[in-house]
Image 1 (tube, rainbow, N blue to C red):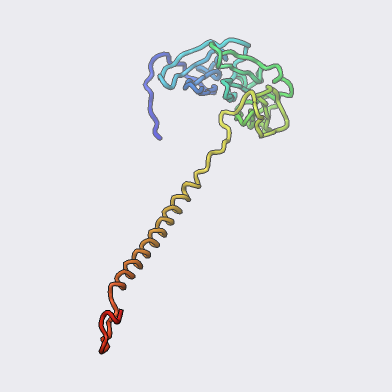
Image 2: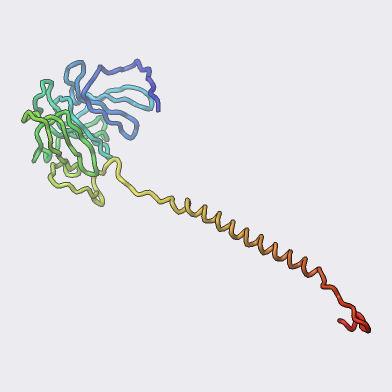
Length: 243
């Protein structure tokens, strides 16, 4: 694995930090939020980088208003939704909208704020992690901006129903609306062919040895038959009388 510098001069975005970056299946990296030159970027200002063409482009997302933030976290669902949680203002204070969803299936992309996500919502957290496991977005660590303490709790967000939950069922549902990007799956075992090959080789050797022994015995017996036993001549007998 080696690093490679890209020489790109057209449509370069401003220097940014503490933003969200998610790569879509089509090879497009979606950037939004964070700080641009020490100023909070608008959440509807979407920066796009095409990893196949090595080109930058920009999009103005539509939909619900999502207040600017930095130091937030996001996950990408298999069906093309980027779910964000948390973050803070430039002064590290609480934000109004904690959960928002960006639909990348639409053109332009569209923001929405699930109303059900406000019930049982955790405090405003920034500098945390967000990971997708089956149908759950798992929030951990970070700093609680509401209570001014480090966060030691783990929060679960059900992405299928857009609700915060307190019980965790790791088993995936038979036909979920949204499923994780990577799901554990069983792969066919290849152990049988590995053991079958040595077995066939050993069996072939044994059969070959048996055949060789049989041939050797056959040749030996044939040679013995060709050697006649000595005949004792008795007076008064002939060859015919002996036979």
